[in-house]
Amino acid sequence: MKKLILSLFACLVLATGAHASEGGIAWDKFPVARSQDVAALQNGAKLFVNHCLNCHSATYMRYNRMRDIGLTEEQIKKNLAFATEKIGETMKNSLDPKQAKEWFGGVPPDLSVIARSRSAMGQGSGADYLYTYLRSYYRDDTKATGWNNLAFPSVGMPHVLWELQGQRNAKFVDRKDPHNPSKTLHAFAGYEQISPGTMTQIQFDEAVADLVAFMNWMAEPEQNSRQRVGVWVLLYLGVVTLFAWRLNAAYWKDVK
Image 1: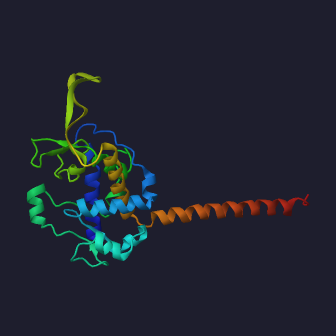
Image 2 (image 1 turned 90 degrees about the vertical axis):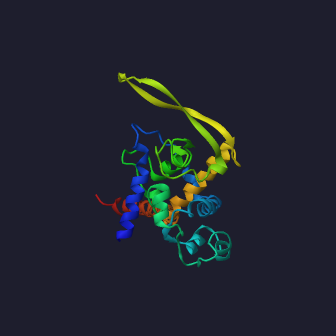
Image 3 (image 1 turned 30 degrees about the vertical axis):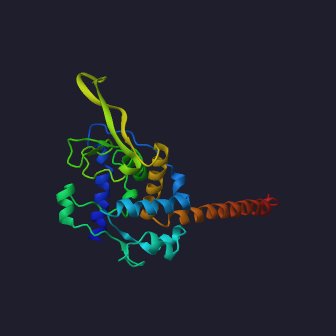
């Protein structure tokens, strides 16, 4: 229980990091339909294992649970699980916490339930935040990692997907605060591509959507099944209500 509470707390810290600077940035809307797409979930699982599991863990998710997104145990063992991992084990990493603290300033949080976090200021869902955060990195030589993030200023995590997206700078301009003319705002004015990645921007956005879809599914694997069952339950209740209404009308029609 203590471990779960710490994990949820870490998720909340990450989710509210966008508000570390004044006002933060508006979050982009995560394409929710991705969470129902089996191919997208499988691609997201591959991206998660290849790019996230090196530093982060998902200690409440077992490898064999990915059978629920259409993967066989053989596919999971061959393509997703590390050679030393067993199919029934949880998704852990081998990063030394002491080294993590030295490199990143803290131990990377567990990502099992990261997508269930919510904005403290009501901007959107945890999936919206993750979708925005992973697409908001830019080069910043003043930071120890060489990277910064618009959604999470001064983030300790480097841009692990930079080879896919490429490298880019963020452009800022100084503007007068319309509500306080004596105050100057450092406003974001767009990105400038430095070097290309292996994907186009559209392809990268789709890949990030797949990754977030997997993390969204991982946070609550039963959600898709629950939604499907919910639709059938509502249809059943609708039919029962119709019969009950007609039965009630037939029963009372001769009653004066």
